[in-house]
Image 1: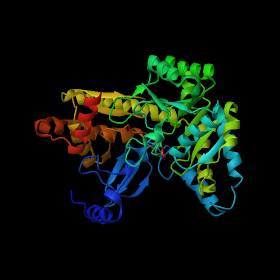
Image 2: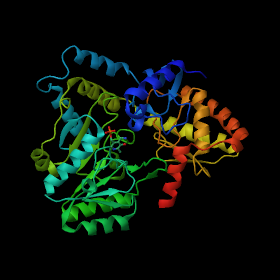
Image 3: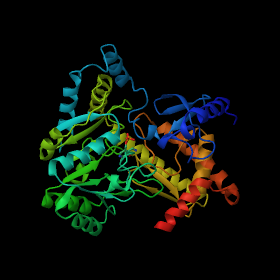
Image 4: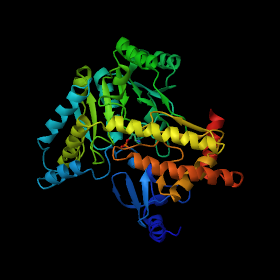
Length: 426
Ligand code: PMP
């Protein structure tokens, strides 16, 4: 496939954007054929800069929850756009939105709005420290909480001091959690946990309820803050904080990505246990009060309460999962499909350098399905049974192609080097 516009854009970007692109949306660690640029998106579909259409199983890495350009959300956005967005003070919508989230999220008594997930997680850490007047924060090894110096997975340009008071533990491992808490002694400010283990390049793991309860108990015993980072999973597991599904209430929860269906807003929600800490800190931003994303959030949250979007996504996810497993098996492949079906991680068994995963994703892309070879994917409510059938028809042919060329597949040089170094460290 010749992609003229993509090639021209990539050449131009290489001159004016470091590495041609940055961060999680750079295609540097994706198969060669993956497009970097997209012209538009609608419902469950994306069009690249050469106007090739894809069923999008990445959903913008999470923000697309109801479908791109969901009509009710777009109408709410247009209404607020006509009134004002970024002004000298917030619009009344900020109060409506805080009230709505406090009503929906069981543990929450207050809300602060910001822009990105990293704003919310960094603020959670700051509030926990301000509330407890302590320093130590427990973080699960390998968990992603954002790209600020304290949490970025790529340490270039950061200092060991930025992470000086973080103590790492192993997700779902109660003994290691207890050891980390003991190490913090009477200086424990908080424990971070994602709702389930959703680290890149690995199988996902649901939270062990005993681990979640132990984290709560440690925080209660020590007067520390339990922080659930719901930025990625928020509203894809529950219409409440994700750990409500296992009966564990945090003091703080971090939200972003999806709750305004793609409009730029994130939130830190907290309980009365740390209202004073939240009132003591100073964190802000020029765009943290903008009204348009709040209008989008209010309408999105209304749709979440009124529809079966969640059950629909889970049902489609299960259909995709079982269909892929059967098709893979028929061609002599075995898949490791982990995590909630609506946030699937799909890896091949016996694929240490991911060459099968890359080959499969590349083949699926050529058939109009955008899948990720090593990051968890996302379903959205705009997907239909027909879309899943479209993906499965493509997958049936892709597995057959893959079986035929299996012996000739080559690993991606950067990714296979990374996987080797991970294996050596494990
Ligand atoms: N926490 C989690 C669990 C995330 O998945 C992400 C983003 N992938 C973040 C925090 C950071 O969010 P953002 O990229 O919006 O800063």
